[in-house]
Amino acid sequence: MKLVGGQAIVEAIVAFAIVVVAVVGLVDLTKRSVFSSGISQRESQATTYLNQGMSWVRGQREILGWSGFLAKAGFIYCLPSDDLASAGWDTTVVDVANCSALGQTEYTRAVTMSTATATPVGGGVEIGVVTAEMEVRWREGERLVRRRVVTSFLPY
Image 1 (cartoon, rainbow, N blue to C red):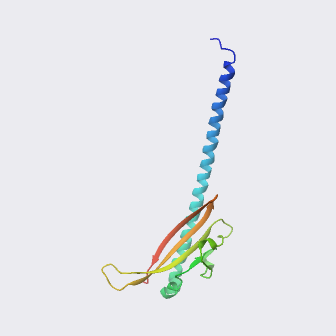
Image 2: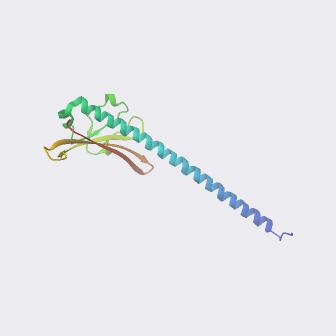
Image 3: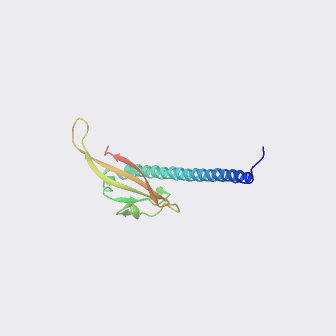
């Protein structure tokens, strides 16, 4: 079969274009995979910080007793330390956004303490409930990402 003048060059250009599109597609797929992996890793770290913070709050409930724990309600407390054993209730803020970063990380962590009352099932005397909302924040580019965990504590 005889090729018409220039047909081989056109075929070579088309083949090259197909290869370029395939390579660009693979690079984009790899980039997305790496980005998703990074997000998953940061989500996992945020979950660890949430769990550590809430464990600290549970421990404080035991250490302070109910009346001392109840007195902490109504405030937002920053927990900027990686070492929660030395943490305290001394850093209060108006907004979680005002908390400083956890050590040398990009994360901030705070707990919002609030109170409410609840009536036991079947009736009875209302009881006070303290709710702790732990929040961890960080940035994904321009987007602010927040993860929260809420736990309610009873006086029993």
